[in-house]
Image (cartoon, rainbow over all chains, first blue to last red):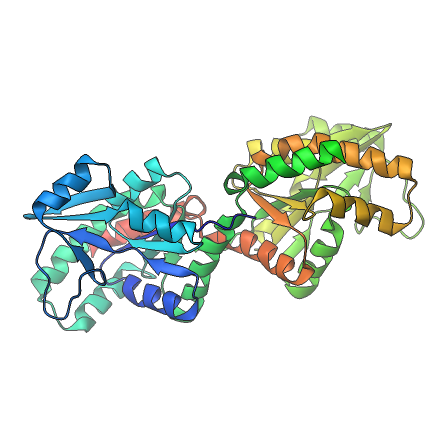
Length: 206
Length: 206
């Protein structure tokens, strides 16, 4: 069976509860590694290089683009954010299933390049619940909340391209479901071609 | 989330332990239904109509073919065997995940017609183990065993077309893995298009 780690991309509307889910998944199982992004923005207080982000200069970042050292990257306002390939592939080689939190456009780019990537879209049970959670945070103005809801409606256009839809109603069942979506991927026939060739040869020569 | 049942096709070499696995799966979880085949052969002692098989006349069988009432069918020696569509669809409508044990050719035909079908191929850990199990049964001559192994080698050509490979080493972990392969299918984006359209509309109108 495939011992190499899998790559799972998690997306979802702001307020869907991705962060909590992933934190819980990593706490519960030790086979996961969280992908760490590279960014050209400066570290904020409490952030450490190699923990929240790899903090790099714009020159280094452009160099990484040049050398195809990023799985994907994007520019927000004036800063770059990207996923260093080496870190992800190293973790996978060590058998870790790597989780990457990223928005839809980046997710689809990754799937195109690495078709065995698992795309998981985390959703609230319904739109009202999403609104309720965003308001419940109490940290954002109604203007920001409405902008987030509008953005959710736009993002929703890409949902069909995902492999799995995960409705985040009960965290307990949801974490287990996410774990299973990633674990069964190890058993995909397409992830076990070497084993299949091997047993085919064995059967011919038995 | 999708409340309709899924269709899972289980194939595998003779001696791989499919039967035991499926029996255990059905014992452990009540969301499964086993598909019952129709056949033109006569019932053997202890077999009941609608339990082991639906026993039908050749005329009825040909009539079912004519009316597209079979998901797939095949002829072995002089008898027909087929999967009645109505029974499978009814069980699925009632929310049951239907398991169908069938050989590779039939499995691929079903996948072509119903792309959301989950194809699971059950394998022994290696060829030697398969041979050992076939000999261990003590019911077949070496000639029959060698014929089975030869057939396994031929069947092995189709394995890549399956969704999942399930290596049957420990029954306990194997039953759980099979359960998960089928359960995560409920979360496939492609199985939840109605829900996705619905939440998209909700988001637009919130």
